[in-house]
Length: 197
Image (cartoon, rainbow, N blue to C red):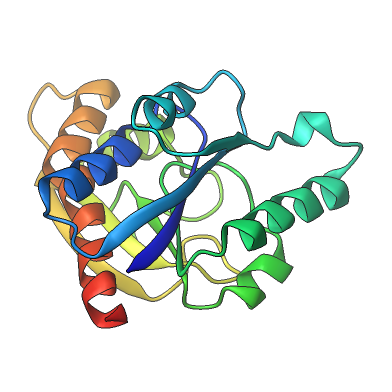
């Protein structure tokens, strides 16, 4: 059984896709050991609670400095003892110590086709605004392993999504979620769980 911890910052739609995937059996041999959120007001915490999943808010605001926050974050992760850490819209820079300790066991979903529209400053709606500003016809989502760089880890899977005439960043964001993110992330976890045995 693959034990995963899902880290989220906001609404938790990708978390919901994982919860649903496990419930429907499209993600096999996987259990969510816990959800860690850095934002006390995030709806993702409610989603976890509704599904009976242990959820923890570890916010940088509650600590004196980044070092204290990083230590608390790592301590909670170690306590949950995950085989895989899934960053599902987690807008926190991971401590290098954590990346080293969990090397090749942290994955992230990014709302573009890496290497386009990724790296520092490209997150959330900013990605989709940049896609529309450049006038590209195809965007999508990428699941990748996390390393010390921003969106530079080895790519696991990608899915393309068409950009349509008249798209706004919000409309495009929704389409990328529905057509790519919510399918790609569960598929990647299922594949990793299968290899995990």
